[in-house]
Image 1 (cartoon, rainbow, N blue to C red):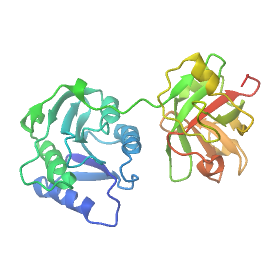
Image 2 (cartoon, rainbow, N blue to C red):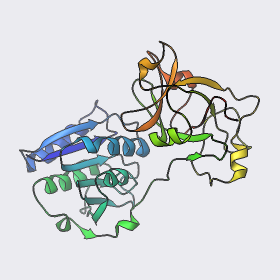
Image 3 (cartoon, rainbow, N blue to C red):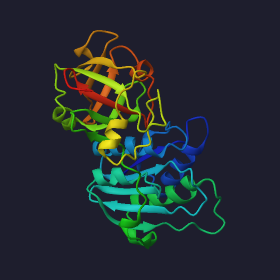
Image 4 (cartoon, helix red, strand yellow):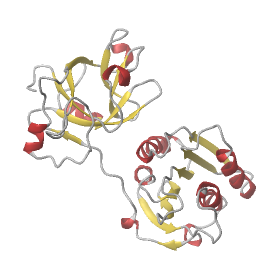
Length: 298
């Protein structure tokens, strides 16, 4: 039995997901389809890429079908990739790359043809699902389309993450889960490098990437790491500084308290025990935060 994982922003109110399931199962009736989620916010390629990359390592070897495709029907390429740990199918908009790297890196890639007369708005059903089904049925990647250089695949900008010389860790909000837990772009070991190990206490504040911003936590993730930027990204009198515990799990703190910990994906994360950290901190994906150990300079 071959497994096909499936992630989209299609939602659950319409027949889009079922149509794609049907295409796959009509070609490979024995395929097992694992729905990762279809509740990605519409068009949110970065979130889908993060969720896919953090999920593929727990899935059986197979084909990973991902469709979050705001550029559907345009000149963006439809692609299929082969990695050491499986195959991936979807739009060439950065969605597949992190997952492919988790599976050992892209070893080969092809451009999928879009047949004449194909509707412009449902490539999930008409282009991507058929390609995933073909791979699940044993078709070789090279038979699906023209080869392309993996170096030309679209990649998403790297999220802003840096450990400043003064010991302050800056990180971007990667995603907020259904519980309101806030995953940051800093991997767990970087917390240790910043001295943020249990049972330390930490200070947290919003980063202002340039002088034109004030008050909010939003950033564009394109900082060049210069000292001038580090100075601009400090605190100002209007910035709220929050003190919190560094812990191991939610129960490291009392109900209602904030904790910094390493989550199940190995990333730095923020949670409020029995609460919603994203709401408490008023943060959203792409916002930048700064964290330092209590006692270090800010």
